[in-house]
Image (cartoon, rainbow, N blue to C red):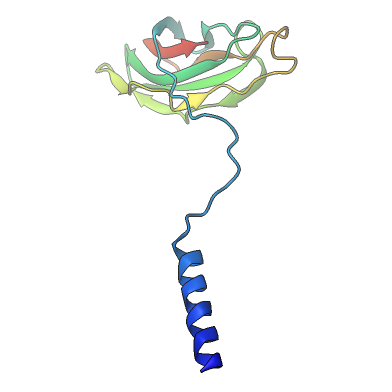
Length: 145
């Protein structure tokens, strides 16, 4: 009888432990960043600055729209300098752009540009667009908070 009670007790304890949710350490609140700005650009066969980074602010990307004069490519990148020339890192791969708009846009950010320390005083990364051989006009849907 004693073994039976111990087995029942262990079964109940095990069932209770299995039903408990896994809890990790909370790092901070989940906040969705909305993109309230439109950064416009135009260029041909170059990297152009779409929006400059600012000390103490993070850039968020919600989407883009590109239109070209002929078939070409465009890619969103980030980095420092006048045209993201230092530490350039791709956000998107090379996107095929044609004379009809190439668009990807959503309400909330899907990418945040990494911060440079010290965050409050250092010039932060900017968002740029690397353009292929034809002229491209476009917009980046961004937020900067």
